[in-house]
Length: 229
Ligand code: CA
Image (cartoon, rainbow, N blue to C red; front, side):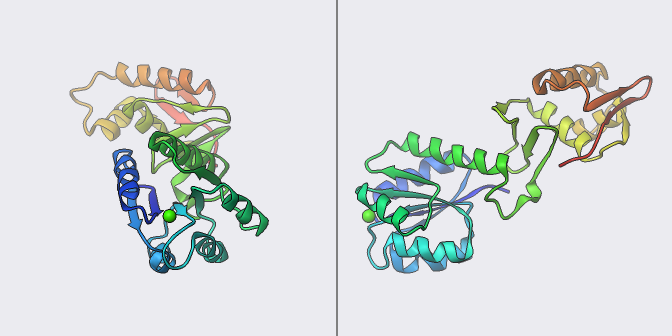
């Protein structure tokens, strides 16, 4: 499962550079260079984010945005060389999520894409496929991107810390021994040091600043206390 980004941009070279940077960030990317095919491709591809140029051969970006908004709440980032186009879009009440004036740096574009995805996954406001987002208390976890956020910032867990947290979270109120956790995460426990689990759980608690959600069941193991969001 990856996030899908569709780029509608008639400057082929620019579109290809954007694509390469987004592919490097592990997104799926679809390119489209003309306005006439853009909406049909959008419907087929169902991207999470649409990067949309305004001045296009064929149907222009504003009309594409209007059609997209009749049926989708996908994140739309408008790109245009003319800032006056942004006012036109606002004037029409079409509503895009972000606007970038050309020329822009590609790194800036990638940063905006990431910021939009973080925001939409934390506030759950856009995504039509929310089954990949789980959480508890003020923590939300995006199973697609393996990102963890609280209300303020992203929280960085190691691969194994993340796997243990999600495993416990997906089995709320069920007690697991350290052997069971080890076996589930590493595939076997016989060669493992069970203290590894203890250390990982401590780290998870520290990083989440939450000592209550993962409960130590003395002499048995751990359980996740409470319900997922
Ligand atoms: Ca253009």
